[in-house]
Image 1 (cartoon, rainbow, N blue to C red):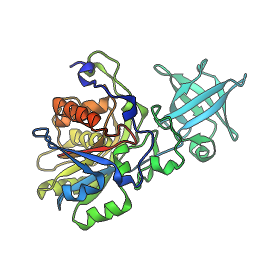
Image 2: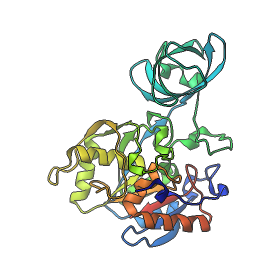
Image 3: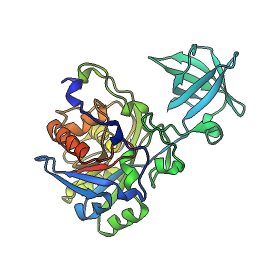
Length: 341
């Protein structure tokens, strides 16, 4: 399976530079995964597309101000630290922008916080140790790391958070959830659509293009995720009662499928899970936990495009993307959405 099998042409003007207001006015491309049939809606039409007894599973992670601008010690040269994953109380895996970031190199992160490189990982990744827990400083020195394809300033940074975000730890937003409003959630609950939450702290690798010629040779970096006993019970009850389990976003898919792959039993169902995941979903993968998916439009040759192709069929997805481009849908983080059932 070649990485180029997941490429498509996208005019730059189709990349959304800002979110729509209200959140639920984005467009919604609905696909029947059985045959690829498409229908066009607005996101606030979602209640009419779901049914009583369905379960929506959300990722309630919250984006942290993970980008830190620092100065090298000595010298004062500029360097950028992007927090990727917490290792211990004071150690983090980071992505560095700047040269000479070798073991022992110290930087001044501002406000009395310092960091030292303790390990070199692949490419520009490093393990750094902060002088104090960095979480105590992020509101002062940190910046929200918007994706590099967004060139317009975001004045309200809460628009890069879901309305239900509550577990700090992500370097990027689970963008499928950005379309939900409190009012839409209330409407769904009132009609008998249930909700559950998982937590996956999103790293930037989730959105990175695959560079290997063969897609299955790509190594996906680990991300921490958790599926609680309450969510496991709701998933199992939904399946037992004939409802559909619908993931809101690819991160929810990966969390549920990670938990299912660890413990799934046709009688016991899915079990709680907490830990790291390196699950890389490619066409041919057999889904154990997910019946439907709400997702945004993804970058060419990305692991996310491969995941949705595994769920709905590569040809179906690429055909849908071609139509979305023609009909001027908005793509990527602040763009429109798909519902695949």
